[in-house]
Length: 199
Image (cartoon, rainbow, N blue to C red; front, side, top):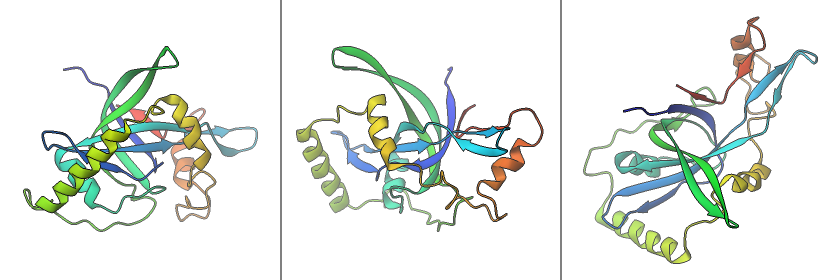
């Protein structure tokens, strides 16, 4: 099978949305923003480029575990998974939106620390938890799916800004914002820090 596998390093643009399918399969959706950076030889500094936003979908155990974790809007994350291009219609025109079917997801440990809690399969959720999730899913279904989930929605979410872009929260400990990025660049031509890289 030919698949495009991708790794995205960025931040949560919104809190995760957890729900259940009609057959009881756990499902979680979230938006991840990432800001590519390029080295400006004239200024000698790294410059932030236009932020990009991706929808990330998690299923089954991954959805349960992400929902039980303390992942919130603005936190740095790393996502790996399969890249999908979703087609949709808006204003009578066909449009395309990139999505990631996640295989792994977690905090970016270069930005902070986290506490890992192993779970026992079958005990990750109680019946009450599943009932509550199903009721939340029913309420979401009555309201209808978001129609602004395409690329245009990214522009709206871009107003939230990259919480790590200005370097105030991205100090790697060497006294310079994004120090690791500069080390990676070296002298090999124009160094580029790709916040989303396809494998």
